[in-house]
Length: 140
Image (cartoon, rainbow, N blue to C red; front, top):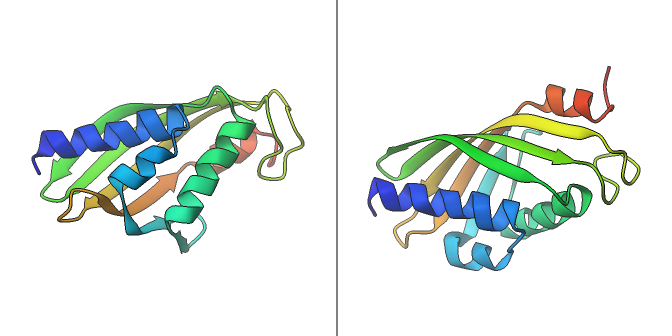
């Protein structure tokens, strides 16, 4: 797989999965044995949790948008920097009651590994949880 193909697949995850909420893209682009490493929470998750998280955050932030700022590919690994924005105008989320109107703008860094079948097999995610919590009124 070429670096351009890897970048395009990661942009599809951002656009189709996160921005549009199209959970079917998971079956096409994410390996069934996928593991996500969540640095902030010091834990791992899999494909099922990825789908559940996307559905949950899109219910809470219907206007959620992830913007790809930069992507770098080295072999089978892609690193990308995103800016995620949205308004909490939907369901309860992360301890918030429904529709607080809080605006979100947070930076995210993802590192993906692509397996031999061209699907993402691993993802490491680091995001600015402090800013996230401040903007949503969960911290002072």
